[in-house]
Image (cartoon, rainbow over all chains, first blue to last red; front, side, top):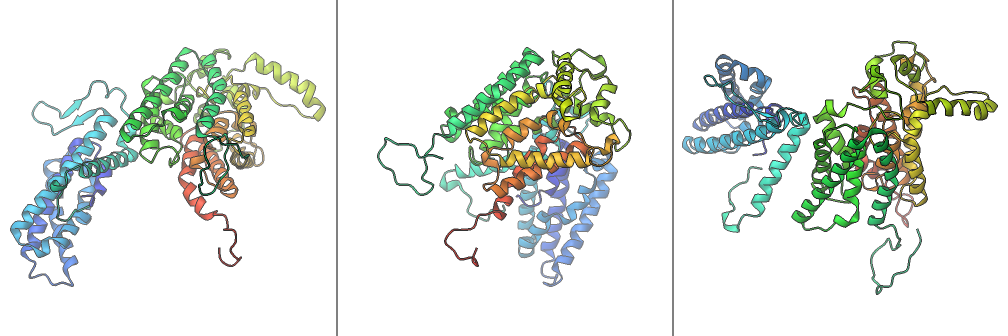
Amino acid sequence: MALGLCPALAVTTRVVNGLGIGAALTFVLVSSNVIIALLRDVIPERGRLTSYIAVIASLVTVVDLTMQAYTPRLSEQLGIYVPLLAVNCLILGRSQAFARRSEGGHTVLDSLGIGLGFTVSLTVISLVREVLGAGSITLFPMGNFSGIVKIPVLSDSPARIMVLAAGAFLVTGYLKALFNWTRMHQPRSAQPSQERAV
Amino acid sequence: MSTGSRSAPVTVASSPQFFDSAHTRRIMWTVSAVLTPAAAWGVYVFGIHAFFVLFASIIAAVIGEGVMARILNRRTLRDGSAVLTGLMVGMTMPPAVPVYIPVVASLFAIIVVKWTFGGLGSNWMNPALAGRVFVYFSWTPAMTGWTMPSTLPQADAVSGASMLGLIKQGLSGTGGHVGSPLRFLRDAGFPVSTTDTAVTDWLNQHVLHALGFSIPGGYVDPFLGNIPGSIGEVSAALLLLGTVVLLARRIITWEIPASYFLSFALLTWVFGGARYGTGLFGGDILFQLFTGGFILGAFYMATDTVTTPLTSAGMLIYGGGAGILTFLIRFYGAVPEGVALAIILMNVFTPLINRYTRPGRYGLSEGRR
């Protein structure tokens, strides 16, 4: 799951950004992997990377244009990071490692799981960064709710460094440390035996 | 170092086998003691709130250290390093800062910079300075609001600014022909204390007249500590006195302060005059040395043994680099004070410097190093 964190550093300055890019990535991941899995017998070995990129890029374009049309402000915030999903290592990596050898059904589950995990991680990172760095939580506007929840004490003088790059690295590092710590302290039987995608 | 006597049974350990009274605890408490006069001066000229800032940062550092020691099962509360870090953090704070800021700085220094990276002996960066930089970028307005010391006459025109801050805002690029930073400050309304005028006149008449030159008024204030600034950095005189003690006890060595001073002074002298219109070789060295955190940084922060290179050559490179960076940031950077950033940047380079200044191994022939 540490793959593909590049967008994490740049965009996770608001919770809604984390949710948005997570959702976009999940969509691209699931759909591209399913297509690649379904076509795995047709795509030749030597031309596979090119074909994968073609599939992924088309799907990213779909997502990008959809976001620009239906969630313009979010799209503006995320800026170039949505198109950059096309070269996100996570998507390409999964298709290389998994999608080209598995059936459609398995791929869907695998991709959904990874996409969801990615979304959760990014959202957690955004939550910490935004709460500490801007004193608010920004969600989707719904009806009368403008989408911004202000935290009373922190929003007066937040620690601005958290929404800058240093804060991103700090939060990501500590989150990873937390994962490692929980994994170290789990009882033996509960530890997963299949591949650890870190 | 001298061999001391041990009354315990003989223990056989690998080299080095010198024993000395310079235990960690003693070093830490000595440095803390030596910093106290400068901190006390800061409280004296800036008021009681400065004391609360120092107190809060020390307490926060000790608590942070205690919590981490509990979590990690190590007992280092007694070795004075937390108190020293807290004191250093407090001394780099502006005197009127809201108390939560030094608390966060201390906690960041102890928990994130010190313990996350391995504890005493493994810091990758000076914790106090890293803490300061963290809060500087987090709460910049609070960290750049300065108070006038009580020993200077009040001047409304320049309230809230520091000398370097005024210069950074007021002089842009190489415009102007004001001649010197002191002249610029006088023109901007920065006051001079009567002590300064008196001492300067005395010096000019009795000492420097014989040598054939005179100094303008305005240098004595920064030297004594009658300028706005962080709590612990203003009094160059007291800090330098402390340095003598540290050098005498071999707690710090001459290489880093000397190379830091030389490179910074040289660059300031050669290029520093550009923005004041005095051309090359016309920079004002004394002003740059005594304002801002230079003395505190060069002698106390940059010499922290863990984050600095091991060999003499390495230390000279480290000090030189810090001087260059400080010069660049102070004169051309976006922030007025460059010492903290320069030192932590050089800290990050220390492993690289260590790698390239490894001393030759004894006993091997010339060709194989």
